[in-house]
Image (cartoon, rainbow, N blue to C red; front, top):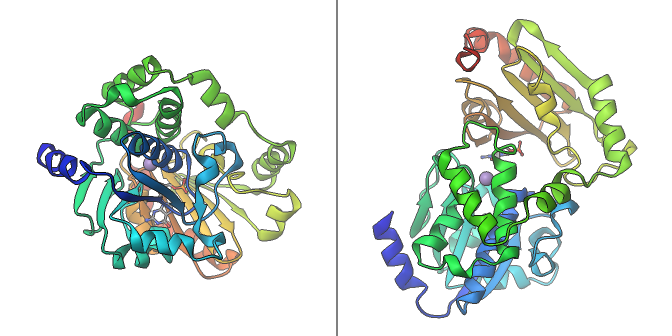
Length: 343
Ligand code: 5GP
Ligand code: MN
């Protein structure tokens, strides 16, 4: 990575027209790393625009720079497309394949701008001029932090920038519980706290910011919708479009729901299958060696990480659930494998 840093440092040595983009329905890592990087590049004198393919949860709106984010799917003016076409550098954060940013992907591909990939997802597409990619990182926010430090600019990380990066690390590690949490992760967080990150505030803003309807929906999903298939150590929750509407579900309201299914004793794979009307969206989680990245990639046009991945289906919700359940017998042995982490 040192050689890349050297060339990259040269690329940003002059003020540039920069676009930062991140994946469909950004989570705290996607948005936090993007806004953190944007704040840094602005301090360095660049002209920076952040473009998200879609909207994102209201519990992320506190991040500095949120007001300036352009939502591509809601942009009727063509401004976002113009910025992409005119950019000299386009940063792609927290995704590894251009299809993850929907129609924006082709615009990014066609732009003459140099592309910079900063990411920690499996199997990246080869489109970037500069790549800061490793699955060893807990989060993209951790990689952005590393990049700023490698460029000799730790002192430019102020409290608001530190909060945005901290949010990404906190959520992508499941609050420092996932196997991706390393000594390095904690060292990065310690540095962010020294730069002013407020861990209590960020945690409250992200995790304790529910509407009553969201909590009622959680109760409904756990009591009425959670299915467990002990034979396959699998649990899943399937939600219809009508049920989302009944609880006035907002973007982000299903975040974390799949983890309840995974928290059941003995469960190795969990899925949340939601009818988003335009498609059925699936979130997969696993523990141990069972790769939901592989599972999502093979059967549901998706991908992600070994233990957290997502995918999509264009069949009905019922058909998607049936397809999911019918796939389990061929994975029975893997799903029943001894879970070494409990030893
Ligand atoms: P989540 O279930 O929280 O939406 O996503 C879990 C992980 O899988 C995240 O790292 C996310 O970026 C990735 N992911 C989610 N949906 C998709 C998808 O449709 N395609 C790919 N390639 N990755 C996905
Ligand atoms: Mn991430």
